[in-house]
Image (cartoon, rainbow, N blue to C red; front, side, top):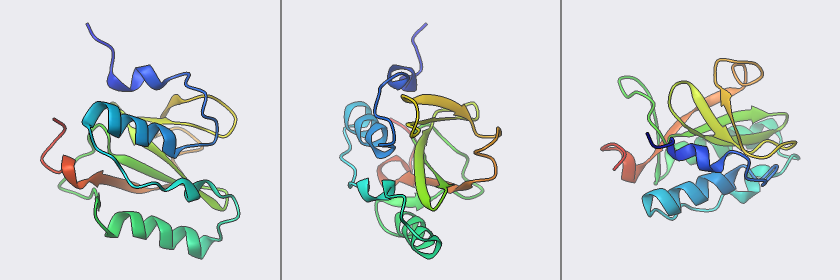
Length: 134
């Protein structure tokens, strides 16, 4: 039995650089180079700016908001409010998100658990994956 694609990122020490696992997984696993959103890490982002940036991710190519009837799938971008900033991870199936928190290496967290449940902004899918994960 092979490990889930996201397992190889668990323990990767890129603390606080939440976009790095997204970039690496898309490049290595899917052959997709995603735009850099490294500025999302800035803790000084005000709420209005946070809302604008989350909307920007979901309203412009290559990201499309995942809404019913679409179901979440592996590699969907998951966005959270994080203090006054924005935190992102990748959906890893079975209610898990792969992410790089500020204070620990990459790990899986349950989306239904605190503190994520109350901070979820939404899910976005890269346009190359609208037909499913290859």
